[in-house]
Length: 250
Image (cartoon, rainbow, N blue to C red; front, side, top):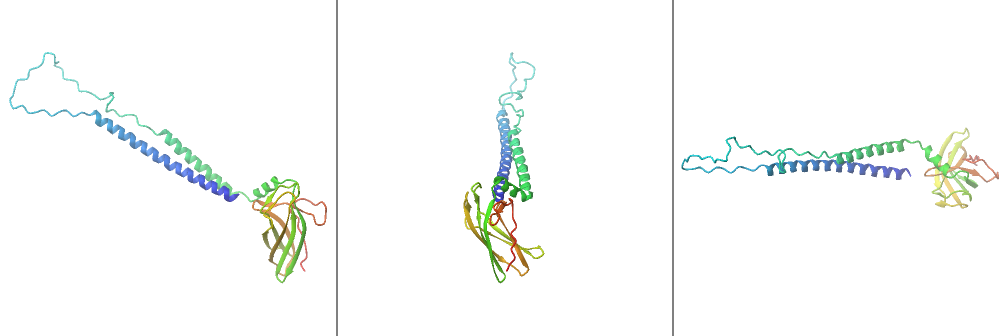
């Protein structure tokens, strides 16, 4: 589950980064196009005056009666269709908004990743217990065999009829010395990958056992955390939760 969440977060971060780069490039291209349009309109509005041809013979200039003595007004290009006045540039508000949204998404996803990586592992265990309330696994049988410094713990675990299906269940064995101090532990998957309601599965856990080992404890867990179980070997009704199994090694 943690790997899946991490993969989704990384993909989301990459998508946010791509969106930010795309928004920045679109904004830059928009500014370039706006500048090009202004330049093109300015060139189209400016018409060069034809050069005057030299007159070899000086002739008196005759003014037309309809021509005003006032100097001709210079045509302006302030507000015409092809006017040279600066056109309002597109501020790229849409691109800026997209960039801000991408940055905000990047910040939120980064915070979620940090929270997920720093969250206590007990959260997964509590979630596993909450999904299967009131229906712990049942330890039906348990035995062990010791050869030299090797200890093999085997047994049978059952998922009750009121329980929900359990996948990738593992048996964990903890070793303790005569003073009750922890020595070592080992973990092995049960024989069946999935235990449906009412299903049983044998298990075998082999591990090194020094001479100081005096007892061991068995528990069950999945990738999401510890799975509660009750001991059904001796008592018909036992308290729910992880039960220590103390056996003196021979």
